[in-house]
Image: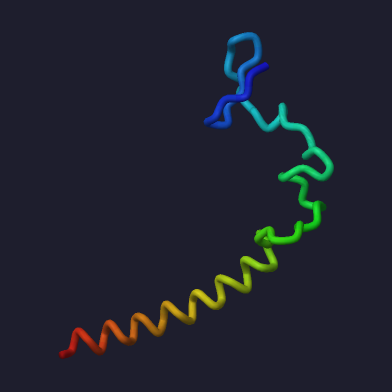
Length: 74
């Protein structure tokens, strides 16, 4: 069995139809384990933090748009 960089999987030289069937659970404590706590100095990449960041980003974008539209009228 061979896992390719593009996400496909080969078994005995033939590409399988459903590579999802050949995935295992994440290694406990590994980088893909969703239950691993964030270590000191590591960035929090959880869904909760990304929701907070996206809200802040949206308000900044709307301010930029209003500045751009006022500059266009000059």
